[in-house]
Length: 161
Image (cartoon, rainbow, N blue to C red):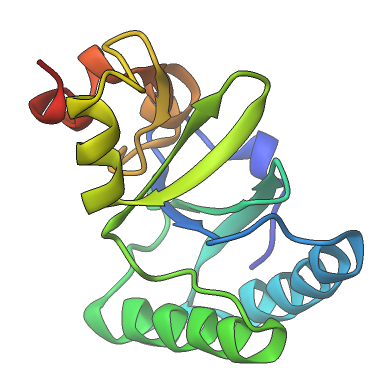
């Protein structure tokens, strides 16, 4: 059951998929239509899942699930991953590679491999104050408060001197 992302409770479960490049307006419109269709019929063991989404900065697909009524099961999570794979193929982007880092580089959002981010940290091209996107947040509250954080406050800190 599709709901507005803003209306999801703070303890809703969150999944974040980052694109390896900035999405075009046409791609964002396509993803929005596909997401609405998918979330409208998304279920777990026959129970409707109350879910919403947003697309941030033309780079991130954020899915939120209110688990008060029904929780995602292994099968429903697998279904959502297959859906994301469908989006990847349809628009030619990578959304599932967790070995990439996205961060602010000035006013721009940069996307680098983890290896390149490590090199940048070693060369002091990124610092403990570089704002990174912590896609490991689990709830809507964490997403709203701890998604865009200085690297020193995220798992990224292990790469900084």
